[in-house]
Length: 183
Image 1 (cartoon, one colour):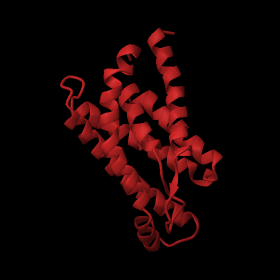
Image 2: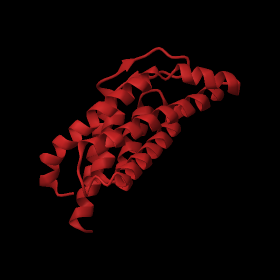
Image 3: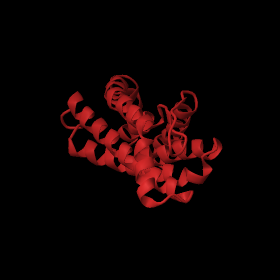
Protein backbone atom coordinates (compact mmCIF):
# COMPACT_ATOMS: atom_id res chain seq x y z
CA UNK A 1 0.00 0.00 0.00
CA UNK A 2 1.36 3.40 -0.94
CA UNK A 3 2.07 5.81 1.88
CA UNK A 4 -0.23 8.45 0.34
CA UNK A 5 -3.12 5.98 0.16
CA UNK A 6 -2.55 4.95 3.77
CA UNK A 7 -2.46 8.62 4.75
CA UNK A 8 -5.81 9.18 2.99
CA UNK A 9 -7.38 6.19 4.73
CA UNK A 10 -6.21 7.45 8.12
CA UNK A 11 -7.44 10.97 7.33
CA UNK A 12 -10.79 9.52 6.19
CA UNK A 13 -11.27 7.97 9.62
CA UNK A 14 -10.15 11.16 11.35
CA UNK A 15 -12.49 13.29 9.23
CA UNK A 16 -15.40 10.91 9.88
CA UNK A 17 -14.78 11.37 13.60
CA UNK A 18 -14.59 15.17 13.21
CA UNK A 19 -17.87 15.17 11.26
CA UNK A 20 -19.48 13.03 13.97
CA UNK A 21 -18.24 15.41 16.67
CA UNK A 22 -19.36 18.40 14.59
CA UNK A 23 -22.90 17.09 14.75
CA UNK A 24 -22.75 15.79 18.32
CA UNK A 25 -21.28 18.67 20.27
CA UNK A 26 -23.01 21.65 18.75
CA UNK A 27 -26.71 21.05 18.26
CA UNK A 28 -29.51 23.59 18.44
CA UNK A 29 -32.88 21.89 17.89
CA UNK A 30 -35.40 23.65 15.66
CA UNK A 31 -39.11 22.81 15.85
CA UNK A 32 -40.37 21.20 12.65
CA UNK A 33 -43.33 19.33 11.23
CA UNK A 34 -41.13 16.50 9.93
CA UNK A 35 -38.30 14.92 11.87
CA UNK A 36 -36.23 16.56 14.57
CA UNK A 37 -33.89 18.93 12.71
CA UNK A 38 -31.16 20.94 14.38
CA UNK A 39 -28.38 23.36 13.57
CA UNK A 40 -24.92 21.73 13.51
CA UNK A 41 -21.50 21.79 11.82
CA UNK A 42 -21.53 18.24 10.42
CA UNK A 43 -22.32 19.25 6.83
CA UNK A 44 -19.72 22.02 6.92
CA UNK A 45 -17.06 19.52 7.96
CA UNK A 46 -18.34 17.03 5.36
CA UNK A 47 -17.86 19.58 2.56
CA UNK A 48 -14.37 20.46 3.83
CA UNK A 49 -13.50 16.77 3.88
CA UNK A 50 -14.53 16.33 0.24
CA UNK A 51 -12.49 19.39 -0.75
CA UNK A 52 -9.45 18.03 1.08
CA UNK A 53 -9.63 14.30 0.34
CA UNK A 54 -11.58 14.23 -2.91
CA UNK A 55 -14.85 12.51 -3.71
CA UNK A 56 -14.09 8.89 -2.83
CA UNK A 57 -12.53 9.34 0.59
CA UNK A 58 -14.54 12.46 1.40
CA UNK A 59 -17.84 10.73 0.63
CA UNK A 60 -16.90 7.75 2.78
CA UNK A 61 -15.98 10.02 5.70
CA UNK A 62 -19.20 12.04 5.34
CA UNK A 63 -21.38 8.95 5.10
CA UNK A 64 -19.70 7.34 8.12
CA UNK A 65 -19.67 10.48 10.28
CA UNK A 66 -23.24 11.60 9.56
CA UNK A 67 -24.68 8.09 9.35
CA UNK A 68 -23.05 6.96 12.57
CA UNK A 69 -24.45 9.99 14.38
CA UNK A 70 -27.95 9.07 13.22
CA UNK A 71 -27.55 5.43 14.23
CA UNK A 72 -26.37 6.31 17.74
CA UNK A 73 -28.73 9.20 18.47
CA UNK A 74 -32.27 8.04 17.82
CA UNK A 75 -32.42 8.57 14.05
CA UNK A 76 -31.69 4.96 13.02
CA UNK A 77 -34.92 4.60 11.00
CA UNK A 78 -33.83 7.39 8.67
CA UNK A 79 -30.04 6.96 8.80
CA UNK A 80 -30.14 5.52 5.28
CA UNK A 81 -31.54 8.84 4.04
CA UNK A 82 -28.71 10.72 5.75
CA UNK A 83 -26.14 8.45 4.13
CA UNK A 84 -27.71 9.03 0.70
CA UNK A 85 -27.78 12.79 1.33
CA UNK A 86 -24.09 12.70 2.27
CA UNK A 87 -23.25 10.81 -0.92
CA UNK A 88 -25.14 13.29 -3.12
CA UNK A 89 -23.59 16.24 -1.26
CA UNK A 90 -20.09 14.80 -1.76
CA UNK A 91 -20.73 14.18 -5.47
CA UNK A 92 -22.00 17.73 -6.07
CA UNK A 93 -19.11 19.27 -4.13
CA UNK A 94 -16.54 17.20 -6.02
CA UNK A 95 -18.05 17.99 -9.43
CA UNK A 96 -18.37 21.73 -8.79
CA UNK A 97 -14.89 21.94 -7.22
CA UNK A 98 -13.42 20.30 -10.30
CA UNK A 99 -15.66 22.37 -12.59
CA UNK A 100 -14.49 25.72 -11.19
CA UNK A 101 -10.89 24.56 -11.72
CA UNK A 102 -9.82 25.71 -8.26
CA UNK A 103 -6.59 23.69 -8.25
CA UNK A 104 -5.25 25.52 -11.32
CA UNK A 105 -6.37 29.03 -10.36
CA UNK A 106 -7.15 29.25 -6.64
CA UNK A 107 -9.68 32.01 -5.94
CA UNK A 108 -11.85 32.37 -2.87
CA UNK A 109 -14.85 33.21 -5.08
CA UNK A 110 -14.57 29.75 -6.62
CA UNK A 111 -14.81 28.25 -3.14
CA UNK A 112 -17.94 30.30 -2.52
CA UNK A 113 -19.41 28.84 -5.73
CA UNK A 114 -18.69 25.35 -4.39
CA UNK A 115 -20.21 26.26 -1.01
CA UNK A 116 -23.30 27.74 -2.66
CA UNK A 117 -23.81 24.55 -4.67
CA UNK A 118 -23.34 22.49 -1.49
CA UNK A 119 -25.87 24.58 0.42
CA UNK A 120 -28.44 24.40 -2.37
CA UNK A 121 -28.09 20.64 -2.82
CA UNK A 122 -28.37 20.19 0.94
CA UNK A 123 -31.66 22.11 0.91
CA UNK A 124 -32.94 19.96 -1.95
CA UNK A 125 -31.87 16.62 -0.46
CA UNK A 126 -33.23 17.56 2.98
CA UNK A 127 -36.56 18.49 1.44
CA UNK A 128 -36.70 15.18 -0.47
CA UNK A 129 -35.69 13.26 2.66
CA UNK A 130 -38.39 15.09 4.59
CA UNK A 131 -40.96 13.97 2.03
CA UNK A 132 -39.81 10.35 2.35
CA UNK A 133 -39.74 10.59 6.17
CA UNK A 134 -43.23 12.03 6.25
CA UNK A 135 -44.55 9.36 3.91
CA UNK A 136 -42.90 6.65 6.03
CA UNK A 137 -45.36 7.51 8.81
CA UNK A 138 -48.36 7.39 6.49
CA UNK A 139 -48.73 10.97 5.30
CA UNK A 140 -50.08 11.51 1.79
CA UNK A 141 -47.64 12.79 -0.82
CA UNK A 142 -49.14 16.29 -1.18
CA UNK A 143 -49.18 16.84 2.58
CA UNK A 144 -45.65 15.37 2.87
CA UNK A 145 -44.34 17.87 0.31
CA UNK A 146 -45.70 20.81 2.29
CA UNK A 147 -44.65 19.46 5.68
CA UNK A 148 -41.14 18.76 4.42
CA UNK A 149 -40.85 22.27 2.99
CA UNK A 150 -42.00 23.84 6.26
CA UNK A 151 -39.35 21.80 8.09
CA UNK A 152 -36.40 23.34 6.22
CA UNK A 153 -35.42 26.28 8.51
CA UNK A 154 -32.64 24.32 10.27
CA UNK A 155 -31.25 23.17 6.93
CA UNK A 156 -31.38 26.73 5.62
CA UNK A 157 -29.37 27.98 8.60
CA UNK A 158 -26.89 25.09 8.23
CA UNK A 159 -26.55 25.90 4.52
CA UNK A 160 -25.88 29.58 5.19
CA UNK A 161 -23.23 28.72 7.78
CA UNK A 162 -21.72 26.20 5.36
CA UNK A 163 -21.64 28.85 2.61
CA UNK A 164 -19.89 31.39 4.83
CA UNK A 165 -17.49 29.14 6.73
CA UNK A 166 -16.22 26.51 4.26
CA UNK A 167 -14.20 28.87 2.01
CA UNK A 168 -12.57 30.57 4.99
CA UNK A 169 -11.65 27.31 6.71
CA UNK A 170 -10.41 25.73 3.49
CA UNK A 171 -8.11 28.67 2.72
CA UNK A 172 -6.80 28.63 6.30
CA UNK A 173 -6.20 24.87 6.17
CA UNK A 174 -4.59 25.06 2.73
CA UNK A 175 -2.07 27.61 3.99
CA UNK A 176 -1.18 25.59 7.09
CA UNK A 177 -2.06 21.96 7.74
CA UNK A 178 -2.62 20.77 4.17
CA UNK A 179 0.84 21.94 3.08
CA UNK A 180 2.40 19.76 5.77
CA UNK A 181 0.24 16.72 4.97
CA UNK A 182 0.96 16.94 1.23
CA UNK A 183 -2.33 15.32 0.24
